[in-house]
Every structure is written in C-alpha cells, then in structure tokens.
Amino acid sequence: MRKLAAGNWKMNGMTASIAEARAVSIAHPNPSVDILLCPPATLLSRMAESLANSSVALGAQDCHPAACGAHTGDIAASMLVEGGASAIIVGHSERRADHGEGDATVKAKAEAAIAAGVVAIVCIGETLEEREAGRTLDVTRAQIAGSLPAGATAANTVVAYEPVWAIGTGKVATPEQIAEVHADLRATLAGLVSDASEMRLLYGGSVKAANAAEIFALGNVDGALVGGASLTADNFNPIIDALEAAASASS
Ligand code: PGA
Image (cartoon, helix red, strand yellow):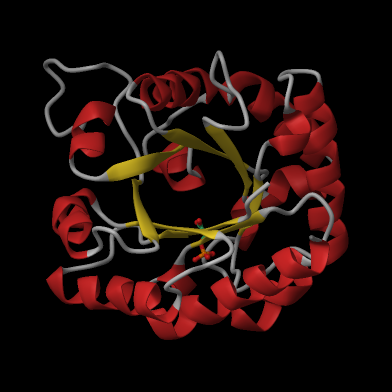
C-alpha cells in the first residue's frame, strides 16, 4: 500500500501559509508516498488553486454529518470536496473533547465524507487516565468499532491512532506502545473489514523530524498524522523524507 504523510494544521494558517504548502510540493515533485495537508477550511480553495497538479493533496479537518441544511457554522462534506478536499479528518480528539463528539457522531461524519466521494481519516486514541488504568486497548477497540463508517474499505478509510496525551505535548508514545496498539488495531480491523491488511494506519502525536524514522520503521505504521510539525515546510519535509525512506526499505 502507499504510505501517507498527512498534516493537520488545526486552527492555524493564514494566506501566507500557502507558501509553506507550495514549498512542500516543490521539495517533493514526485513522491513515493501520498502527501496530504489539511488546512483550515478558509484556505482550502485557494490552496487547491495554488497546488493544482502538484504532489500535495488537500483535506479538511471535520465535516457535518448531514448533506446540507440548517446547521449554522458547520460545513458539509460536499462543500469541502468542492473546495478541493480529497480527504476529511473525523473524530480528532480535539473535536471529541471540545465539541463532545462521540463515536456515533464520528461514524456519521465518516460516512458523510465517503458519501461525498472522499477518504475519511478516522481518529482514535486513549487519554492518559485511560492508559494509566490499563484500558488503552479496550478504548481503542471500542472507538474503532464505534467510529468506523459502514462500508469502510482500505480505499475510502484511513485510521489514525493518536494517544490524546501525546498530541501537542511533545510526549511521543514509545515505539513499543505504538507497535502494540497498531498491531491490535490491525487485528481488530480484520474482524470488521475485508481488506484490513491494506487499510492505512497512521500514528499521530508529536511526530517530528527527530522521531519520524523510528516510528515509521514499526510494523503496521503506514504513515503519520502530524500537527505542529506540518505547519512549515522546513519541519514537514524531513518527515516526508523519513516516510519515503521507510517505504523504500519495506518494498
Ligand atoms: P501534534 O498533533 O503533531 O501537534 O502532536 C497531532 C494531531 O493532533 O494530529
């Protein structure tokens, strides 16, 4: 399968940031991995124009589950697709925490993304409290079972494991912790979809140039969902390079 380096800009990025995305594409004109940047919705269509025919695909960070209607402030998946998104992140822990989104909502959003014709990137991950209570795999199994969209396939769904305590904290999970959860996810997915071995499993949580190679060398890690380190080309480019190196080592 093709590995995926995905960047989530969260609530960061103004017009000037489009140049960062362009610098990523210029540094990787013909990448051996998929590159995706998920800017705030306000930048999406301008970035799509700026990055047309480039190696960098664009995604969105959330969508509403409904196709359209009276939902002030929300954005439908089809609108994001028209704006240039080829993937939509759903269920990020910041949305689960800030907006009270549970698995059923995340599942509905993922289904809306797929119905709009794009890839759903479904995020799951345990809190520190859950990990310390020894409940990590219970939590990730329940989240995957509850959040995976109906009709999920390796072509329309990506799963991102992001331990909540590792996001934006500089605290990366250990290789053992990542490998354990990813192996368990792969096994759990095998009971839920027919092409689990082909479904991309991303790790997210304080991925940066300094730790990327070690993470990408792990089994069942098919890429990363990167927050802070995806905001500049200087930080994101070496992560993409590390993923390309891992892809060529495993092929
Ligand atoms: P981080 O964010 O890389 O800044 O920790 C990861 C994410 O939330 O996707």
